[in-house]
Image (cartoon, rainbow, N blue to C red; front, side):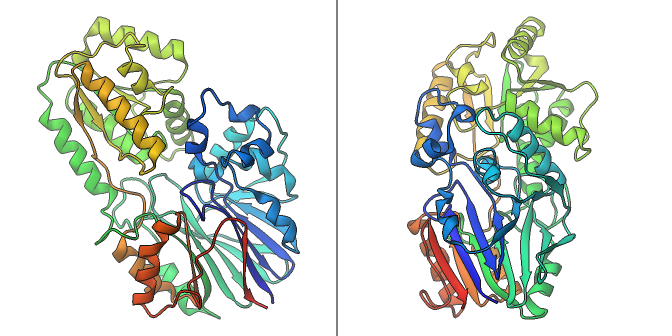
Length: 448
């Protein structure tokens, strides 16, 4: 059976992930993501009102026109998890393919919300829920399997396309967490089985984000302990404390809510995406929050809440807000600019339970946000975080588990691929022979 891989997006940057695998006449697309930094550098861009071709030209979503060179029918579109760099282009591109969107329950719910917010295109693809550990047929000879992984968002999987020539493992995004705060540990047992059954693993497509960092990525339980230590250390402070983290990081939000209550403060979630992700996770029973936890996304509701906090005393609350990357319209950025009723005083604490995404747009915006907060007297606590991506030792462990015939680095630019290529060559692979460094819009033929 002919096996061909189209590397469409995410092979020159971190963002706008999209890869298609053709096995005979059947094609499966993995991810359709947005490169948010390409949007943020423009003022007041509303992507939901824009045409896909304009967003392609902007470099914000994958240029999927290469799909016309792939001879086969798309049988499924499979987002691995609910981050925007993996689902953010579904509303612009999925309607071009007569195929269902297949994802885990939490991811499907986020996809549904993404499609409902679209103003330009009507997306009527079927939405199919499939949980980790389950499989579905792809055409007559292939099978799609979801393997549970741990990442900085719940309900993440690595999809595996089983073909007569061997398995194609799409390895974006994960860390090796054996003691997660929410959800099940990564299923390394299943990865090892896949590496040793049938024809083994024909190709492994891997996220290279932290490949140049030594050691292993710590568990989310380590970030939880770090966060608890920080919050208990300021338990007696009688002024304002504000926290920010990734809205989609439900485990971290859960920890913030719990520790706020333990130090005698009322937690409140503020910002549209904070309300969206936590509200969705609670509704689907992925997390249990206190019954009276306030979640407010609408600007007027947020400002009303800030007025209540100022009236009843900042020392009684912990606002958990959007804006950890310094996004211009996010809640923390507005607070730094003095555009909310919440007044920062000298000595007030701002906890960044997130790391700045290492990309120039984010770094610039985060720097500006921190400067504004400091000018108002805020004290910054930052990097109370663990990454959602594998470091060096995790990559070695995955290669050992899967023993793939071919490896395709992804989720980075050429500079970011280099450490992973070195790592693979340490394991006996060779660039140009079985390690395929590629670019957006290329085809890799694995079986003629």
